Image (cartoon, rainbow over all chains, first blue to last red; front, side, top):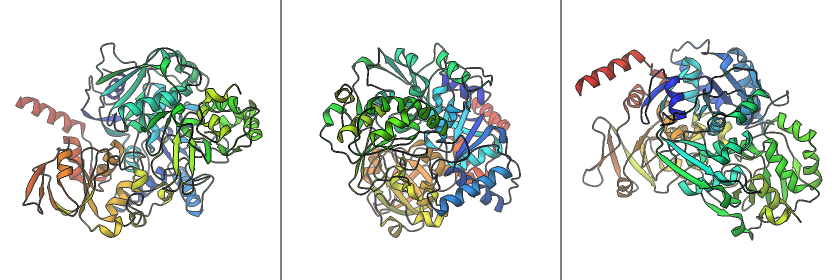
Length: 425
Length: 178
């Protein structure tokens, strides 16, 4: 069995599971945020109206809540949603609530690794499609809607169709100025935005072995954009080190079998990879940065669970140091803890001295909700994960997706720019 | 048995940002969401749809976010079923588990054959679709896997209780048939 199959077999107390089986699996951890949370509350109240008694949830210690999509409260409705969520969490005894303006908080997928909330071998579900991110820890991590989340909160189990696993072996050595973002954009460009629909995407190979945890998280984060049920990487010494810096919790890592069967195996020679962007209006619509250098931009955005982790900020700052941005540039660290580390390392100074605005952690602009949405015909280059029509604002705005280094380079010139062209200027 | 008028959008990858744009995610009033269904693709959509109608779309319908607002908005606008060659996984399970509407997988050729405003009849017991506008020609649909069919029959997860023993018993009896 593959790693994904083994975790699902274990969680459904089956000796063996095969792709296509539908199993009910026990859930270890659950996350909901200020969009899926109010949805859950509504489902609970409807189920109560139909006669269900909902006084307790299955296990409040396995549940956490984040405030990320509409903080700082975008308007009165958002503020009411956040308050309702707080009251609800209190009622059901959920202690882990990462509140905006009250210590550690940030984007849900960033907190799940920054706070080591998910451990290798676990089944983790979240009320958000990019829950896949946390699969980089060696867990089965999948996004669900709020009815599923409500069902799990009551029953502790949920159905999954066991996915086929596609294996992506990343071979060779990663060139300078190429990041995990370029690799995953290349893969999505090749297999398409439904290329992994219902399937698991597993990453292995020399390049993955050398990748830091944060970079691995970029790979799994964007498996959602290929339609994957989950993205996953076998836990190793890097995983162990990352977790040991953040938690004392014990875990028993699960590894795939040597004779595991994969539905597809892709070998990628990473040596040859160049910086990539995804053009509007699909993460699969890729092009080499070099081929797009005449595209004039209005805005550069460094933010989100995909592209505002500490290393993302370090590499962007490295390029921006001593330079000025030519277009409107926004930098939003993905969590308060990352903001603090960036501040201590002097990165925030670099951004502000370059002329960029540094904002609080939020999903706001990434999903076009608030905090810097795009107007009609505006063109943005962004470290985020999606560029569907209207994703970051007006339906006639455009977003190019790229790595933090490419976005920083483009912020300096005002055009889509290969970082190799500005790095040594 | 479901019967309704087809609304066809042949494009592949109709995503959740198009079905219900991000700014509406803070809204949890289902009727309000219906007013913005498919706003990114066809702002007149809610006016065109009547209760019981059927969407016919290209592959990978509902890709993108996990927002349950997407099947809710479509369902509240009146849509009872969506026919497409494939669905994005979270949209698919949200539609079924919330009991909002039926995501039904059909062949690409069937999707091409059906035209806008055709009157369709969906027969879940027989796993077939009949086109009343085209001399009752009939198309096959992919049956739901057993557990999912049970959730569909229950009208969503609210009325569904998973019973491991019952499942084991069914597995045993199926094996007995072979």
